[in-house]
Amino acid sequence: MAGRIDARLQELGIELPEAAAPVANYVPYVIDNKQLWIAGQVPFWQGAIKYTGIVGQDVTLEDAVDAARVCALNILAQTKAALGDLDRVARIIKLGGFVNGVPGFTDQPKVINGASDLLVEIFGDKGLHARSAVGAHGLPLGVPVEVDAVIAIE
Image (cartoon, rainbow, N blue to C red; front, top):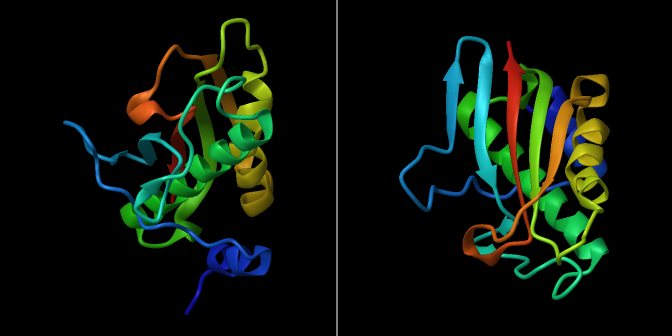
């Protein structure tokens, strides 16, 4: 039987990817008391990196926003792998967003809105969160965006 959040995903026509395995010496998530810490997720979609490059050079702002959205979908995939049921999410506490943009690029908040907007669309008020949106000179695997999360769980 599908839970509330699974039903909401279906209603929105959103498919979650498979939870990606780590590419270095870390675990994809850690549960500590009533918090789930999700390691940085990149725009990995069904076995392949969907976006690579630098925002404002190789990647448009619109594609960077979509990359952040894909990162959020991967956060949800890791959350489901950790908890078994997305209904156990009590609240999205914080996102950390990293954007590899050209020198002088200052639209990091617009990019990370791709992740933030998706989580609010899915979880409503429980999806409202604190966050950072930071410029980064280079990200793993040449991706333009990486997002991590802290999630309160029931």
